[in-house]
Each structure stands twice: as structure tokens, then as C-alpha cells.
Image 1: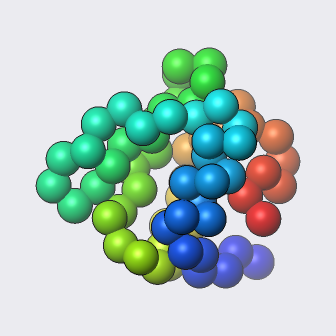
Image 2: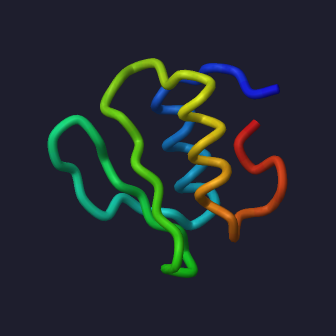
Amino acid sequence: MTKPMKRREVERALRAHGCSPLRNRGGHEVWGCSCGQHTAPLPNHGEITAGVVASVQKQMQCLPEGWLQ
């Protein structure tokens, strides 16, 4: 089961696995994985809901299982 997370924790996990921000426009920042094939939008909020956390995990398919814990 996925839990809500702080935005900085999600960013830290993404950077630790070679992901980087691609663009920041409006209410979301788009992150890309190190392989260059997957992207995921991350809302500009302090707290990221459990549903969005699960969505980011699903969209970043090339990252290892359980990378966002």
C-alpha cells in the first residue's frame, strides 16, 4: 500500500535513481528517468497524495521495484 509522501522525499528518491527534472510549468514539474523513455509529472505541493505517489511509481517503469519507499 502506498502512503502520502513529502515532495522533497519523492525528489530525493528520483535523483538517487538518476532521474532529473525536465520542465516546470504551471502546477507540475515533469521528471524524466535516466533511460530517457519515461516521464512523470510531480505536482508542486508540499505533500504528495498516495494516488500520485503510486502513479509516479507506475510511470517510471525502468526503475527497480520498491525504489520509492
